[in-house]
Length: 114
Length: 110
Image 1 (spheres, rainbow over the protein chains, first blue to last red):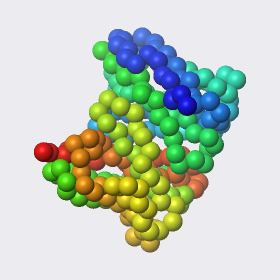
Image 2: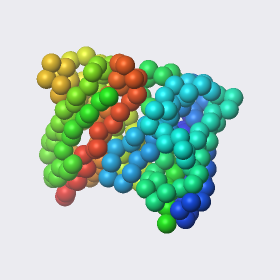
Image 3: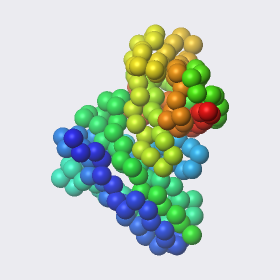
């Protein structure tokens, strides 16, 4: 089966600019996650969707980050305006259902904010 | 919330055995998972312990003791390709989030 697709793989922007990341989960996976992984740290959950509804976004900096999952399939994560501390890899993952312990991750989108 | 602690680095030679410990503080969780991440790659699922005890998958084994708030991942017959970061993770009973530790970088030397 095809894996989790993410784009772009790399993005360099200046602070205060905006950026958007796209994710296409594994077909049939109801739950989609966005994680932020800062260099040398473990992934931190930003937002979790169940179909097209938000299950958890408690760690999403809502003043600058937004995410949507229209039609319960693809998802977009946006940052506007970006800050230096947003430099990280943004990982998308999906699972069959919300309680699953096996998450399949995409290769990630590496963001550098200058 | 959940708090997980694991060593930051471990170095070993090919053929050796490495144990990566994970201690956690949580108000309740479903089980302990382990993920492997090569440099620049995606985290990939390795194992899951829902119950206390040992789970074995080939060269890798994982253990959980809920009474000790402790688990470990055992890597046997180390190979160069095992050089990677290893993360323990728990899904909370209350917040349902899958939370990861900071990761242990394993370096395998010839």
